[in-house]
Length: 451
Image (cartoon, rainbow, N blue to C red; front, side, top):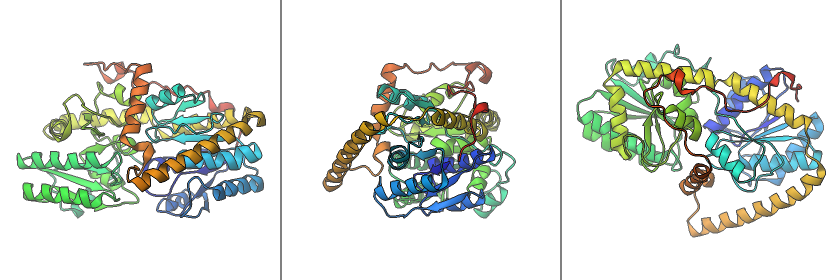
């Protein structure tokens, strides 16, 4: 099979794609990775997977990439293409399904789904809420594939003491870590709120540090807020360490994780308590009571959490775990158990393998592919013209499928059709049903080996 991540920059969706590629290969399938150059190519090579390089600078979606997909299918007799995020899905559809009838499986880990993807291909979504929204929009082949975690590599036994020592962190200091891209969409508000919350905790006399791992377009803005925090605290309460190809030492060194998406899940695997941050002031501590909400809407939120909004709410959530080591330990174990039972890489590989088998056994007919290709091409063309106008007008979001208004609409659409899961106050983890499977896929035991 041909696996096509949307980029090779450090980021959750593409890391998940590469991890899945290795897990699928380990289940007896031949896997080739089609991707541009970037930091994550080293992970592809470390997994001993073949990498076919795409040009870094290209249009998206690109007819040239569709031609490359077509060539690989023709020469290698690929059984299925797994494309991650919408431009690769479009390219794989034209280069694979349209030209060869080869099944394409698409994965969307963004917070919304574009309306012009082919309806004939099976899609997986990272959250139940987005899956429900996609189904309501007409995508009938939509399965839940939550971001997987390699719970063997990401484990509480990883030693973070050298990382702490290298930053001059004392044993009595409580370290909060954020591992993410420093970008405006999705991430920036949480980063700035965390700086403000840590400033308040430090000024109040609590021995805290915030370690931020990552880089991106918003680094200068984050650095300015960190400098303001450090001036108010009188010491380096916020430390920016830059990008780490392998951030496991940072996760292991932390006492508390602040984050969203795949980074939040990785933090859980290290048995660290987690505060999920989002936008419009959202933050919420992961507990047995809040877990059902995250399992439905994903590791992100909009608006008020249980403690309110903004830096004050985040500070209140952090204060609970900073002041109570026993709570840190208890919630860390809870998160680890949830990661093992619900988000393990092996479980995700089983789900994907079953989807591959179903796609191969039920190919799309040419009578459906041809009119769908016309519809997709027309809508993609209209989208590109609209984006060109928005860039000219200065109103285009850097990542339009993660823009707040798009996410808000997706949340609202799903909420209208499916009321939110009630939060079971005062129950134990075993009573919440948090680890039950919602993937709804068939057993993979009869799935054929794929190329």
